[in-house]
Image 1 (cartoon, helix red, strand yellow):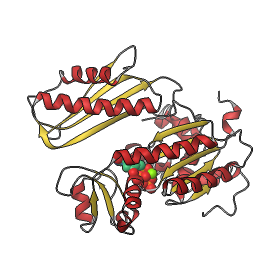
Image 2 (spheres, rainbow, N blue to C red; image 1 turned 90 degrees about the vertical axis):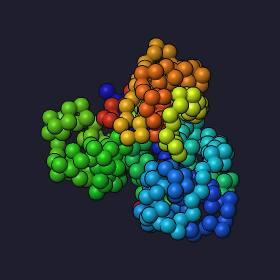
Image 3 (cartoon, rainbow, N blue to C red; image 1 turned 60 degrees about the vertical axis):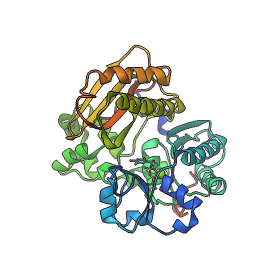
Image 4 (cartoon, rainbow, N blue to C red; image 1 turned 180 degrees about the horizontal axis):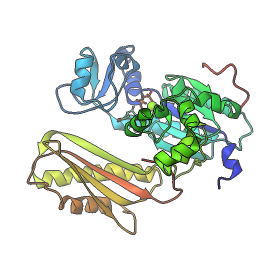
Length: 363
Ligand code: TTP
Ligand code: MG
């Protein structure tokens, strides 16, 4: 049973605009207005981490290979990521968030949920102040969404990107959701979307009118979950555990790795990064998954669950190295390695795998 107080909250979702690219442009103003891609080199095998909105006009997207990005936008300026700079900007925005909310759930370097239910000021005003302070203190723009829960706040922050604010008051949630694609529901990925599309369900309104009963017949436990989300209902609390189910990092290498020692040191590096990232979010994951993609693109995973989560980067590295023994590392060239932590403690989520609004109420 969901506690009623969870349904009437004030949640702000803040997400920086084209984050890595915006930092690079801020620090080199000659890049302003140009298609900028942050990632590997166009000749290499790296991927795009992000790109400026100018580059997006050419169809360049995060996670696309740099080679493909180059084909779509040969005039783009390619820049290697500089994480210290992004981390520094991230620290500043987090400080701002904590000045305005006691409950802050960072989702990544550039994104967080804030629960401001108890605040005396209007949530929309708090969001405006945050956006202004982010601009003043980092020189970067962000977008924010204000809503009664995380699901709607996240969709709202994306609604008027870049540099936008969207406020969805409780009474407007339902109408706000209806025309949206089912894909907007966080937890509905491309495969799930395809299954829904096959049943003629494309929008949240269609999802809702398909009915709870039929959804449950067709999708089991995900039925009630989907039906609630389609109407903009999401009881998940803002909290340090959040809805995140796993956290990891992977690396595609410029040249296939063949020697065991270089494979092990690649794992060490990834383990350090992943451990840093879970620690920052105060998460502890008991399951470690190693992903190996061989040069022929065959991909395997090896998983280990222990009673206690790895307490140091070194412990995580050790698990990663022992999982490596169950692969063909050293005998077969490796293109990509990844490590993921999951099985976090805390609340379980049941998900399956200014342009200020003039009509907005003082919410
Ligand atoms: P996002 O917030 O998803 O993207 P963004 O901030 O670049 O653009 P916008 O929010 O305006 O749509 O991700 C934040 C940063 O995380 C992004 O700048 C780079 C990094 N990132 C990756 O490294 N790989 C990825 O696949 C994605 C999606 C993001
Ligand atoms: Mg962003």
